[in-house]
Image (cartoon, rainbow, N blue to C red):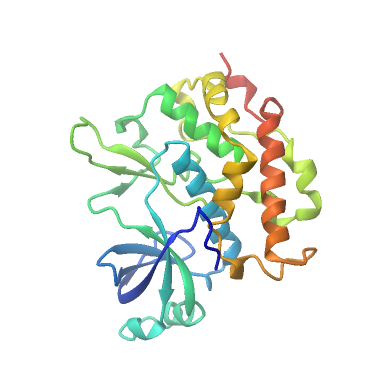
Length: 268
């Protein structure tokens, strides 16, 4: 496991609370040895370890850009802590996921945002533009009007629940085809159905704020948070370090030429 400046905290699951069946990956709620409660995403799920790599890179980048993302941690998971789970398909998933997995801080009282519930959120055009910029930059195909992947969490001092970003496993689509990643780096992305597109986002302002901040140095820090075990054995690469360099190189090139991929119809 890496131990760079971007390293995530590491905890051990001590109790399996319940599975969550709202998504196809069947994450679970666990309690850990730091007394925290986490939603854990498993390496044995159908989406595989690349979904967890995307969760870390996009989630940690979003956090450094000032967007709200629940804390991510690495979770050591022993299927024995879930011996009482009665469903065989869940047990199969848990046993296929023994070892290191990814956890997201459980937000008590938070609720998934329904496709028709966005208007009730405390989100203005500036924040909407920042979120859309992140999704366009990371080629996130899964924050749409049909699948918002947002949570609303009541926060003291705010009239409405505040918006938190979750579920970035479908982002970074280029890493499923590294041989076409260079071409994909400058490809325009269609975000006409983005869940926040109706907020009249000021994309020019978001680009002016974020693009200069997404440097190779920042990206190396973010990518360093991904465990080596989730990067090794990637076809075409000799080591985890080479895969990290590929992520940094691709995203750095994309940040340098944002005019090529930003949704131009949203520029004022």
